[in-house]
Picture 1 (cartoon, rainbow, N blue to C red):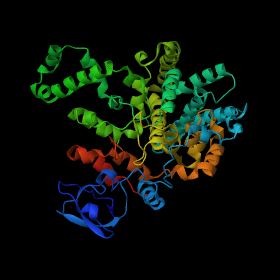
Picture 2 (spheres, rainbow, N blue to C red):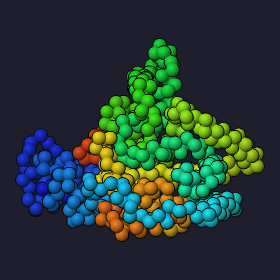
Picture 3 (cartoon, rainbow, N blue to C red):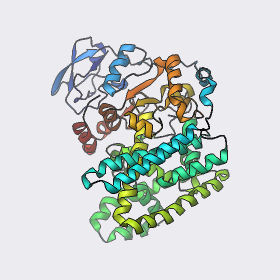
Picture 4 (cartoon, one colour):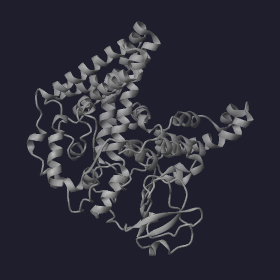
Amino acid sequence: MACVVSAPTFRLEAVKSRGAACGARSGSCLVRHSGLDSLAVRRSFLCHHSFSQKVSYRVRAAAVTASPTFLDNAEERKLLAEKYGFMQIGKPLPNNITMKDIMDTLPKKLFEIDDMKPWRSVLISVTSYALGIFMIAKAPWYLLPLAWAWTGTAITGFFVIGHDCAHKAFSRNKLVEDIVGTLAFLPLIYPYEPWRFKHDRHHAKTNMLVPYYTFHFSFLIFAFLILDSLETEHLQELYSSSLSIHNRFSNNIIEYGKYTCAQLRNSKRRLSEDTAWNPVMRDEFESSPLMRKAIIYGYGPLKTWMSITHWLIWHFNLKKFRPAEIGRVKISLACVFAFMAIGWPLIIYKTGITGWIKFWLMPWLGYHFWMSTFTMVHHTAPHIPFKTSDEWHAAQAQLNGTVHCNYPRWIEILCHDINVHIPHHISSRIPSYNLREAHKVLQDNWGEYLNEANWNWRLMKTILTVCHVYDHERYYVPFDEIAPDESYPIQFLKETMPDYA
């Protein structure tokens, strides 16, 4: 038995004494007032702790087991779906189901490349982007945010076109795919081949817990890399001009920065893996006050733009790629730098710096909003675990561990149904224009195992305020449970974000 909090503003708080909660019956129990994450009840608290009665509130108790079959009960899944902002939380996929079993239910026609439909997608993206640029040029200042939102969504369609090319799902001619993919990524200043290599690993190891450090989620890595190249005595000189700054930051930045870089040098595996966005590891979160603060902001209020740091850290460093990949990576990087060297000066020459901000930077930030949002919604939820390689199960990760989310139809059209994501993880060779039909087949054959949602405030609030630090039993522990005094950005999100589902 466990207690389910009636209002989402309290948190169960365990104390040393045991016994009361495990013997709880349906009725009521007492919990201490403390800012609750939107999960309310998690496995590690179930039937293992009693609760303090100080400043207590009455809540109702419900039967929730703490076993691996936690999601087997349909009523419990329904309650969790409502709490997290989902339409449906899928039941656990049996261990004996394989990827082949799922693939065998998909008709072969879903994998066929149409000669015209990909170019229709190109036409939609080019036309909608041109319309966006026109709106930016003509809109009064107070309508510019709407124009930027449209244009940022339109160029997200460019990314999806390149995404299809990278998965060999755009054309039968592979040279055409490489050219189109590279051109589609250029306005985003995204190097096509580096992204393709990294993205392939994401598909191979979806929701596999890879022990790399979350350093790329913070711009502080640049300071760490610079500090790592200097001697300690030189570092101390840098801060000697201000004793207070030196005393406050030298230990945090220098020691943790050098430690982080040493760990990265000693583990090529950590540099070569990219499986979407892993949870934060607890030892990393607790290693440095400065890094802890950066991570709280990065996984909290800034998470909808954290694909920017992912883009910058993972795709421009040749050391992160295998020798056989370097040649193609260099070509992509040369294309991106050429676009920046030619395109940016032309924009500035014609429209000035403010024009560069209006016509390029703001739509680019809009694109990264969608890049970040799509990625975290597809693979992040309190009930979806990241698992170590010895526990990882391919079919469970791809079918059970991926989320289908419906968005307003105009967004789905401009983004070429990238939100229809479960069939894409069953097979990345399904073209984007066949994803909806493929999802319908999965619903007909595997519907009870699917996680499905409509994009809503509660869903986003759950991800941003709950899905933080990795825990083997609970999957995620919120920042404000580990470091409540430093988690005011998370508390701010809880208090200000609507809870509409």
